[in-house]
Length: 160
Image (cartoon, rainbow, N blue to C red):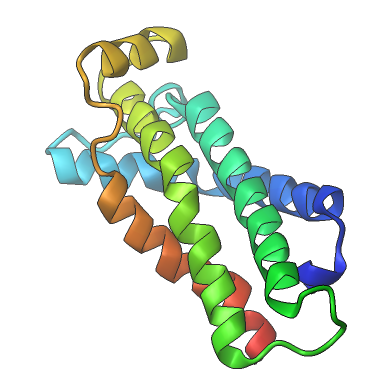
């Protein structure tokens, strides 16, 4: 379907999906990160939603990027011809869209995690990450995760 939508339409779908996901799942992100880092469990929304703007920025921009990239890659694969994509093309387009989104997703997720751990503003967190040379930490693993995940939600779904 994404190959039949304009880039603008794909962007709106991605933005909406990203915002809904972050709003619904922010607390579980905090609990996961707290468990991994040995932090105490809390139900305090001031802590659960700390890092929400960074996570919202991350997820919305990444999901927009993935939807737009997926549609664009599919259009490149068909050469503008109106034909159904093969299973491999569907999965490949999804994987490529997700893999490439890690350059955006990795640093933004790192900022969200650091804000959850330490608090502070998005600007001070970004400055700390850039100044410390840590901005690309985890991007390789993020690329594989996003590639597989995006192949699933933008590739497997249409195939099924």
